[in-house]
Image 1: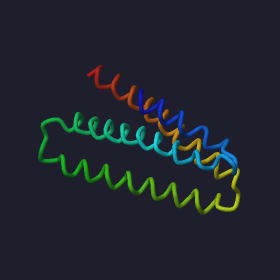
Image 2: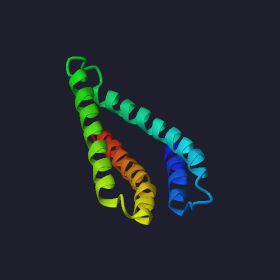
Image 3: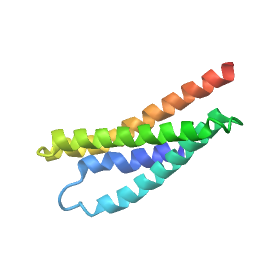
Length: 120
């Protein structure tokens, strides 16, 4: 929950920064980075919970996770730069809303996953 709050509080103001307030991006990026680090540690912890004591397959699982993480981030960055590099306002909204919506989706998927695991 701390990560969600940090990411949302630091991402949403990015859409409203003006040229005069552009230096605040450094403060917001710092808080956003702390929230993203917490989310990354949480994701890694959840993966280790799924793996459990199965040490034979753990390297494969972590490798697949790392590959898809890098692929998804690269694809999203490529798409954003390709389609929004000329429209400053659209880029501001995309850069503000992408982390916010992603963290909310990650939270909902985590809750659903925990409910599924508890039902077993």
